[in-house]
Amino acid sequence: MNTRTIEHEEATRNLMAEQYLLGEMTEDERDSYEEHLFSCQICFDQVKAGTELVSHLRQIGPEASPVPSFVSRLLTNVGQPFTMTALALLISASAFNIYQHRMINSLKQAKVAPSLILSDGAKAGGMKKLALPPDTRFDLSIQVLQPGDFSAYEGLIQTESGQLKATVPISAEQIKDTIHFSLDSGVITPGTYLVIIHGLNPDGKKTEITQYSFQIGQKE
Image: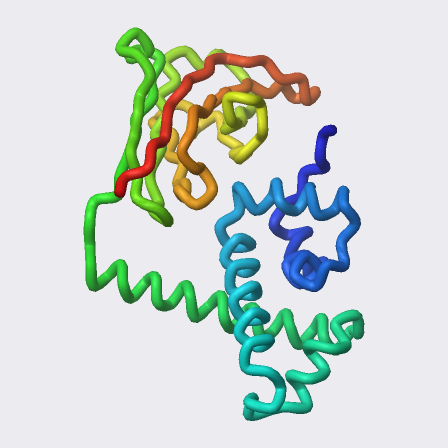
């Protein structure tokens, strides 16, 4: 079954992170939003922060909170508009806190990110492999030598069985240079993957230009 594509602007406008956490989505809406999480780091961080926040609040209980009446309403009346708005504010604050810590840590501990380069000219060398520790961001670089003449392009990352992990739009200018995908080993877990590059015509017709395969392993 094909899921509907959700853009980040729509997810933010409709408070989809909050709906997802509160269990207020239909099955189709949840499937579509989970596909969106694979390619949107901002929404992924929001859901992660919200999950940790709600789990923490349930552990400490409303009695231990400095604002017990608010926490009680948050945990018992999750369907009310007040709860949705309040949870959105809390998630935004938590996500910003995660982002802030990441930035501070990255400045303190500058290091070279793991990377993998896939190119039309290197396919004869066999399947590229990269071993990563858990929760590591890595760079996947693509070099398309013969992109053709299209108005725009897109890159798809999917599992060997065909499960879509990410869809990335690529402009006609970007295709001329090395294309960089910033990915997370928490999403691209150990396994074999395909990268498929499509050329897009103004009428929306897609043409497959090339595809690559790579493997991700887990480093202890």
